[in-house]
Image 1 (cartoon, rainbow, N blue to C red):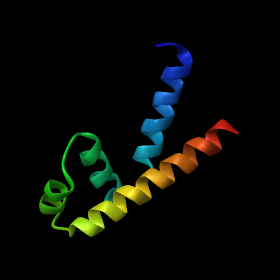
Image 2: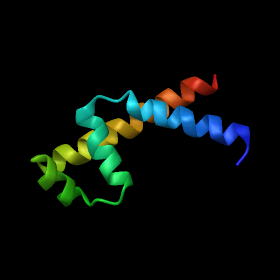
Image 3: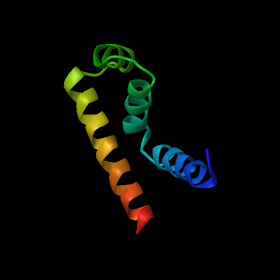
Length: 70
């Protein structure tokens, strides 16, 4: 991987770290392969809340990364 992709990976990691923990944890668990139900059980949340937090995290990350490109 070239320097551009390394820089991009770093930007993505930083953006994920900047998420509030209540949004970061479900998002990270989901990217690690956990199912919504497993995340909900481990975090003592409803499945709807887990989906909502993951959706919010994706949206926030896309906005942050889009801003970085401009």
